[in-house]
Length: 166
Image (cartoon, rainbow, N blue to C red):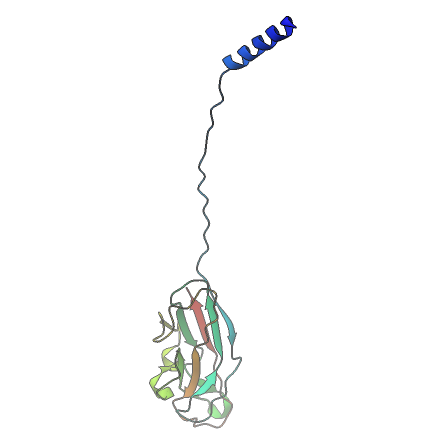
């Protein structure tokens, strides 16, 4: 029995003399990023204009993944509605995009004739919300309306492109 106790004591002494293992830590920085984006989620496919200075409501919904005002660019392909019938003619129209319904007639809005070429940018358009929660659909008041009478018989059209950027 004495040998067993002595062997155990020698083994315990050897363990006590072994070097101690020190604890260590590491810090890791974890990063992620997401670029700001905006999407047009719904818009009118077409709007039919009738009388001069009469607003015609359209549909326009967008959402951004950030709080703040996006940049809108309005671009008219023809600078107004245009016909190729009967020798051709173009009539100007106003463009309205704002949080509140229009208080003025289309002649007081952005004119399609001013939105040709590279278009016209607004950062933000006057009155567009800049404090919407991220990823929340925004439904501003959108309307267009003739500001000049149609003078030549025919079918008139234009392509209005609305681009949204963060």
